[in-house]
Length: 499
Image (cartoon, one colour):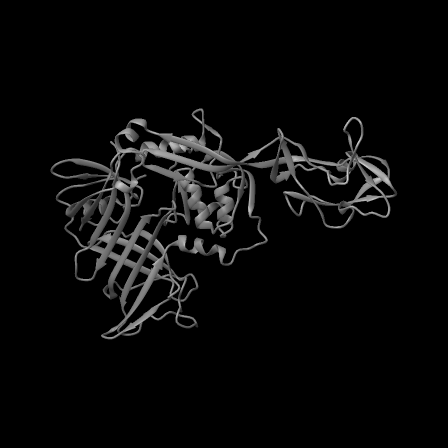
């Protein structure tokens, strides 16, 4: 991943470092979608941060303090203390005079709304969150009429959004195909159950496929830069080099907590099977003949449970001598097909109720008989998905373990796949990559500069050039701080990577 592309003249001005950084703040004051720009002289302070979350996504937030001596910055509309919450705020940067502005952030005012701060002076404070915060709230007003289970999908494919899990999850937050910039990751996932908010689910998916997940300016949602994607991208080229003349603060810190020499991955993998028998009637009492063939007598006046409304036929499949629960089934017998599988004497038998659509792991049926009879067999066929419990992968570097003892990373997750990547299941390939990435002592470099490196982005590769060495790393967090009458400060936390 690289920094954002900016105007050539703007880039040259940043490199010269002789002109002050300027900030432009545009807000939707009235909440009608019309954005108005704040007077630059009224911007007292503005700070913005971006960071890679441990859960997998990249988020940004900010805070703005405006001079409101004359009460010009009042939020339109009606309400109480949180007036203006959710209004859109756009942040742009430039350098010196006469150069274009570069739009860097799209934020939303948080639940505190427009905060009126008084004495000495009168000010307005805005606490800002990016769209990720909006996606986190999707579970608070979830549309329960939408399906929470997706089957036979791909991780991500913009040409097939109806099969793309990224698109299907994002759709729950109202995001459409045109709102998403994504790579094609053609790894199949037979079954996915959505139990968390949209951002949490997408973050977990991004972790499993080493993807960059962000809500930047160019699109409401970006899901890309994965080693599993079909598109080719350059992961090696550095976007920027911080040189000694640019840096006024530099610190190296050991990242001992990121080291591991063993990875223990333990997951439950959904497995799709061919169409087969997924239910067979076997409720007692049962009678066996000399050939051990079961027979279920239905005699008046006794009424079996299957003859009562509300009987549940839970789907199971045979795995040797073990029964395995079916978590989802489709291509299920129609009522006519299921009745053709009925074997009986006397009767006759048929289904007076046959519901295989309300639930995907069981059928609601009621068996009806016209008179006394013996049932020899009743079955339902379908295409099942079962859960392979406690699938595991354990990898370690023997030499490192002998030298330093076991430092294990325990991992679990919902979105790993058994699709083959270079001849290995995807979850094993993931564990191999994770071990290789963590199997050495890395450092975190903190860099502070007055240069207007506002086009930087979390996840981009950079170089840090000191008198002693040239260090390569990935931006793990950044902050941009503007203060009226003071120098602009850009701070970066950079995690060292191998050359």
